[in-house]
View 1 (cartoon, helix red, strand yellow):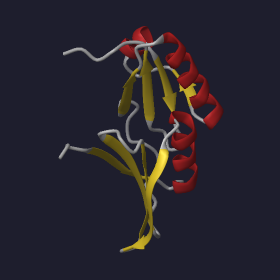
View 2: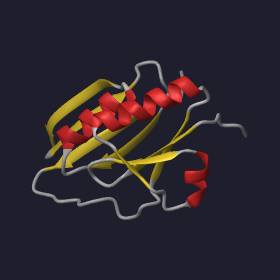
View 3: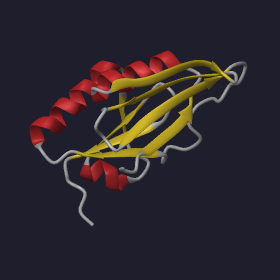
View 4: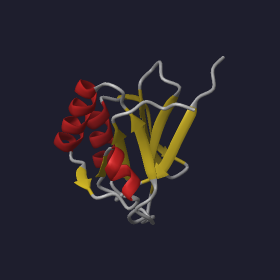
Length: 129
C-alpha cells in the first residue's frame, strides 16, 4: 500500500478554484461531496499519483484570500516542452502570472496566483535531494 499526500484548503470560490486547477494542471475530479457536515468539497489529481488536492467550502463561512504571498505549491517540470505547455495551460485556465514574494522563484521559474490568492510555482528543473 502506498502513502498518499492530500493538500487541503478552504475556498470561497469552490467551483471556480476547482475548475482552474482541473484545467490548468489537467487534473481529474477524483471525488466530490455535498453537505458533509456543512461542507462541500472537490478532490483533484491524477488517479495513479501519490498526491491530490482538496478544496472545500463551509456554508456561511468566509475564508478570504490567502494570508501570505509565500504559501506555495511548487511543481518541478524537467522538460522544456512540458514546462511551456503547463504555463500556457495555467494562464488559459485563469491563473495570473505574478512576481514571486521570494526572488529565488523568479530566478528559477514562474509564479502564478489562483482566484483565492494562493500561489503555485512552476520551475524548469527536477527535484534532487
